[in-house]
Image (cartoon, rainbow, N blue to C red; front, side, top):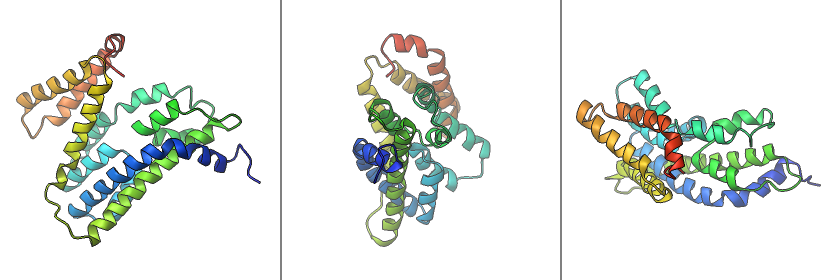
Length: 236
């Protein structure tokens, strides 16, 4: 007989809350897997990268990094800045993830935008251990992403189709993220900071070298002015 505090109960309680994440992760994961395959990589690459990296935007970017010259410092800085928003997610989850034992290690690793949203908003059922519930949400979300990436990598091997323009998927993804953030904000200070910083760094450093300086500039500006932006309603 299943106990309410068991892991199986936690997964049954968590699954309905992760259905929207599942639909998005499977679709985007398949696109990522296909993108990796048409870029010349085996389906094992997107599968294991989804398991070990588990950062959608960073994984898309990793495709071009793997195909470029070896630059570990540039790769590290780019990964750090792209994923830097998780610093704020982590601070917001300190109380929720408190007293979750060793599960906290995986909860920290698996904290994505969507998992953060679910674990912040979904109520933990009465009598169910919160650590097991948050763990179930996090693991289900990663399983969706790994499954999508693997399926995409396999489909890219066996289904013939015109892949021209598929490499634009990463650009499209960042455009969608930008639009979603624009719609969520009452004031568009963060959007203006991002656009102006990118344009300025593009002019100063050129098209081949502006990405890292612009991300550092954006991160610095958002860190310095986070409180006034939040007070003005410009950061959700």
